[in-house]
Length: 130
Image (cartoon, rainbow, N blue to C red; front, side, top):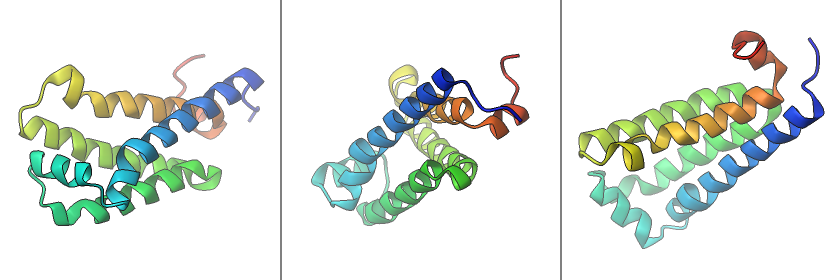
């Protein structure tokens, strides 16, 4: 198995970094720091506020697994399940399609794109471009 090109590797790292920074700053940190915005958002989405720290820890675990090369695929699969749950929540409360419901898909494309570009094992399983 060959190594990814230098450009693909760095673009993959940048996408991975952008995804991780976004998740940490916009989702995980507010939950783990117990910020009011996290509680307000969860209530708007129909979740009891008591779930905020637990969901933050689950998100953090998924992102950390995704950032470790050896466990990146497991982290991506677990994060995808988390994003699927977020999408289902948005559908359930009737939020707009492109700005809310599909936002999880936008994040997933960044996450999987970054991993695909930097990991030849994933390219072997998902040969999107030949």
